[in-house]
Length: 142
Image (cartoon, rainbow, N blue to C red; front, side, top):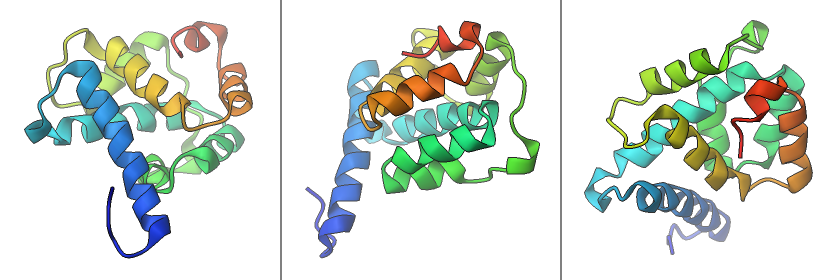
């Protein structure tokens, strides 16, 4: 457990560490490569955020752990969203934003990161998110 001296900060850090550790374990990345799970989280969150309508971005973001929320919103330009992307374009963007080789490719990376994130939002919010994207894209989501 983190020990920042502030229990609410410790809780936030612990949630993020659990999220990163889940990705490490899913891909069997060694601990000394800790930058990879963070890069994976960022590489999936940004195209997802840009693909969603502004209202859905905000509703989904409100349920993310606070530190993850900062990563999610970093660089966001609401006036430029939603960006229309095919599934192939979405996965290509994930791949372009993730600078490491990954077994299973971009789709496995995206599904793994989103499956881990799904544990941190309500079931209702997850269903709302899926209902706000085309069915073909929703099929990619866990």
